[in-house]
Length: 156
Image (tube, rainbow, N blue to C red; front, side, top):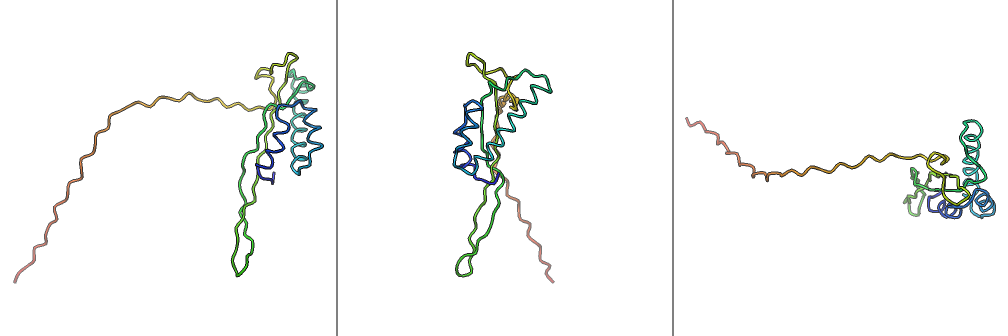
């Protein structure tokens, strides 16, 4: 989206942790330009959950969905030039943000659903870090100076 991540985070912070219906109502009455786009993104996530529950056979109750995770990350920047006085040029940057919303199902007792029921969340398997083996390194001896060979001058 063509909005700075800082401005997008202001709206995303309003819906973090809320039920889906509350989040939709909050976005409908928020007076920020990015709120309409975030609303479309939230509706898309809800539609994905409906698709999973109806077509794929995954047991997802759409009424118990809540916004588990939201993020606005920095995208590529568009660098532009504006004319300035006395023949100069001022550079400015148009920022782009990548918006991300993850929905999850909340059970009646308030606990989150297990990872199998999380809708739209991509998990990254972190490989365990291997400890580096310690090896002793020898200090390098200073480089030897090469003997400069003098040219023999031919005497006649």
